[in-house]
Amino acid sequence: MLQFTVPQFIDVEDKIIGPITVRQFLILLASSLLIAVCYKIFDFSAFVTAGLLIFGFSGVLAFLKINGRPFHFFVLNLIQTFRRTRLRIWNNAIAEAYDYIEEEFSEQAGTKTAETTAMPVKHYTASRLAELALTVDTKGVYKGEGKDN
Image (cartoon, rainbow, N blue to C red; front, side, top):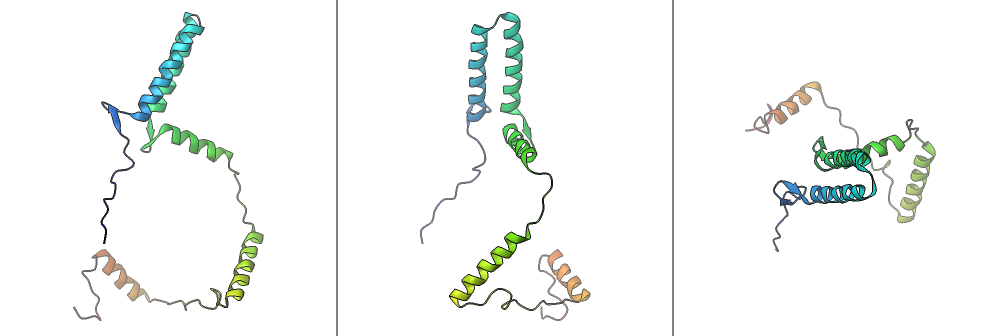
């Protein structure tokens, strides 16, 4: 059987200059180019104002992390959240159409539907549930009262 090496830590970004990653470097490079364009276009007071705003926004975009994720993911998730509808209503017609299609395919294939092949529900007593909880808590060391050790 062939063995392959599995990549580890694929979510860690490559560092290029000290602790700065490629993404951070590109953001800072683009913002410095934008500040240089502002220097050529605006007078001094407008340049300082625009430069500080661009520098602050690019610093936040490059270095700030919220819940361990980069800031631009936070902004994208925030926009996506505000674009969604506030009220979600269950549309039963879609579920009924899906059930109808499923029944049609099962009749054509000659198989039984999930309703006819459903397993009976097992009802456990409280003592059996307590015994299972103890087995899980002890990580399998406890084998149960009725079983041979």
